[in-house]
Image (cartoon, rainbow, N blue to C red; front, side, top):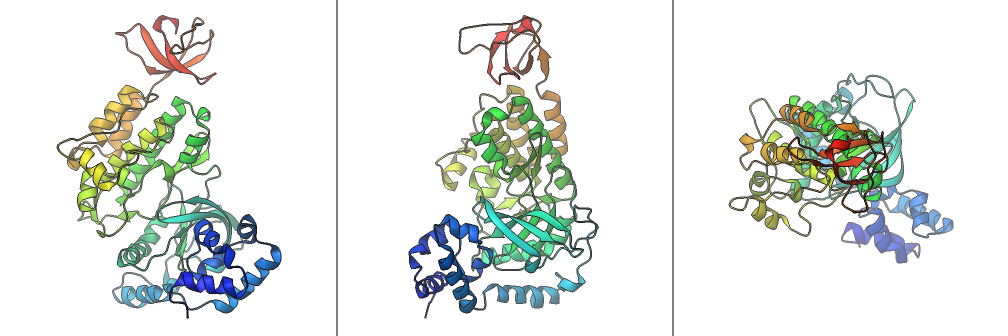
Length: 438
């Protein structure tokens, strides 16, 4: 008898002479439990090179081989224990959330698994993977959605994370801001699924790395302000994100981003200024301040620190912060006595970088700015555009060439200097030029 879930999967594959696909199914499709096959499509198996007759044999064997999943006990725990403590109502008694969405008003926070159809994988991370999907609402309306499937673990930290998330899901579903991805609801399945608004252009981090010429410095500044605006809204509602990073910022269009990924988000009570997570829980080390790395303490101030790291990701076009370092090594750098901070990317204006250092990365959390103040300060120093009154041509690679009438974004410009640095919005090139030409 199989003693682990992966062995059960291997037994099923052996039973239909498909065990040669075992490693690909586990590693590429993230199938580590029999119930995970519920989210595997024919297209997924096509991608592994599995023939259609073999796929039919596999799906038939899975139907016969399914066993009662471990998440049933978790749901009973939520139902019996938490409802006994009046922390979570019966699913049928969930209040209707007054949310206006493409599907119409009044969504229920709990979504049935049968109302979802899952398609190709569009993202993968430490805490789960994301598939494109279609959700059929109670009124029959079909809505394109993103479905995050949390990677399952039986350890206490993971179970607690899911329990905490379920308690707060109704409040999260009420969040409504132009720069925050809408949470439509959750599915109590294995794995647990979060059903959210779909961002048509996908992950900002991927776009920055794969197509950097598409994003002018002025656009990066727009994104920075939009993320600050969304985080100011979350702060006003007493939510902490805990995983703010470019990988969790999504592109609705080439000009608009939204903050996504609610897996670690928590609401602070009126009495609390911070949330202490389970010491065994995973944290995104490179985006965390010292107090989060040392004590697992998360707050609005820790989100502000993460925002600063996210801005560095923007202006470096997706370079990894603190590359190659583990959590202990990062802590040694950012904590006393070294207090090192990420270096300024070449395309990041100095005034913006100075604000990150002073307002986002103070060692003492109480000395970091709130998001509303931070947004206002960044708006005041963001670079502006000017027109070239004369053309400029130079053979030096460090200089910026332009024609009369070209629009230039001023990255570094001061009345005290005769040479400025900017970006030609027609060519995308960045370089130095004489100040009197604009």
